[in-house]
Length: 116
Length: 110
Image (cartoon, rainbow over all chains, first blue to last red; front, top):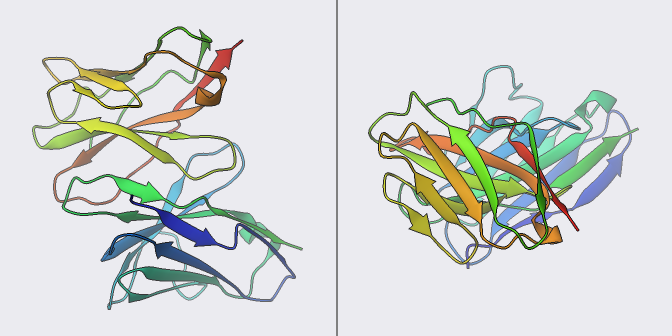
């Protein structure tokens, strides 16, 4: 159980275009999902907390107008990278909590974004 | 949430027990210890978590010292597929976010 699916697993886009990444909890409902970013040889950095039915909460230094997050249902959150630039190339990973507080977070397999 | 300290890298022979240490000397009473691992180019995988008692599941054992200032993750019979970066994370009750440190890069040697 507790499967989080992320799509696509990799994407290449041209500079200036937008890319949407989907994160789904397949066998549980997730009122809260999290989006992380990971640059090569670095650890995961939390970008934002996505709450179902309300606005996302962004970490300091993350541009909310550039990284649009929509959590339209209890099983789906999307991250849209708008007007992508080469410096946005990274590994984007979503996660969701199953169940009560202190239940573990379960992670998707990530999306590798390359902006050319 | 309390900060954790882990060795940057470790090696372990295949078939032996891998013991990964973690220091969390500033942990407070309501904070749990979580362990995750990340195999190259994949999302992190949950391994185990605990508050103060030792825990065991099908993947690993977690040993937490009595003062809770440190813990050890034990992979009883390491295989090549256990090669990954292992993250020890302390998370407080009521705080859903996980903050990742730099972890320990564990290499299993044939």
